[in-house]
Length: 320
Length: 217
Image (cartoon, rainbow over all chains, first blue to last red; front, top):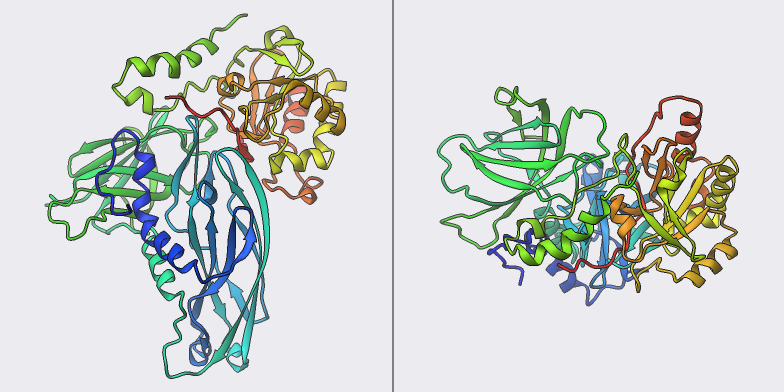
């Protein structure tokens, strides 16, 4: 069911964005049989690590290691992306860490478009999601036997019919050891699959620009020369900042020389001009020589906004 | 001044879509967001939990606050369980402001209430809006493109929307966040009444999505 290449044109939201997170979601649910998470409304939450232990020499070298908040939700319930869209709030975490350990920012997988009603669109995750958080250890921590990681999570879990607040206190003890064998835990594949669903920087040869029109932003993408196999069949933009675009408006995709244009309706709440448009661009391509059916790609883009008319000369680089 | 903005909104999904199977109009959400800051507030007539009807345009000459309500939404509960919303209602109605609490949840969804249920709730919570308007079909909600509860709209005596967005600057469900929050509704009313420009006329209205009836198209 996840191998869905034929996108329905009429209702992009239902099938288009699912492909991306699908691989990760399958892995999440496959692993769920053995895991006991902390209960949250209509689901469970668990603090997990990619490795069974932390390598002493890696800590001594100041390397980071990854932990994750693993959400598993009942069918019909969702949590929110960093920009939740029209409603809702993303999960918030407060870390309880020993001295010498600091938490980095949450790495958010590509979200899905969640339609609450015809006029309300949120961005978030259904079924299951892993939010990866890098931990940075002070080299001095290498002298310790283990490290204790605690997380207090507050979140909002919603269905189309209701919203319920949740809280969870999570903890994890990670030994700090020297081993010969690889330290990968049973969650290593899940971390790997989740990273696959992260938006990546766009190829440096691609050129993006954004024109500020009266009531819309027009995002123009140019793939450069001799690209014939990039037939974009679907495109969707998820803004990182709230209240920039009208989330519920359909995003109009039009072919353009060497690329495409995507028209994004401005939010009614956007009362001042914006300097940059930053977010995740999901493209569905129709590869004539595709070697597998999965063809959605997510890119992190950060493009300067120019007043209409001055667009052509402004080639914002999608690389980030 | 009677406006007919409600009419096309109602026509839109029910009539146009079955006729035009051409998809584009049907799959696109109705975005005729009539309530824009700086524009005239679209008129409506609503039935209160008391049975009385209220027409917005009858209150030209007064400030009007619209409060989208869902008694189960944790963001709304924060405001009511802390007593903050009731305090705002009492304070501002005592200053001559008209305050409409609007329930746009569809039957069977969180926040839906019958007239007696809503009257019980208002009494129990010691809420003091001018009226609680029952909008189970979501007509007033869609007219203002209300996205969340507790979304707040402030209309000036000339009938112009001067604020649309969140109740305050703390988008959480935590009661402890009420005391330190900057309340955008009070700020807009204070500034407008002092003859000043409203500094923050639009914000993202945090909260639960309005639990409208499922789209029929």
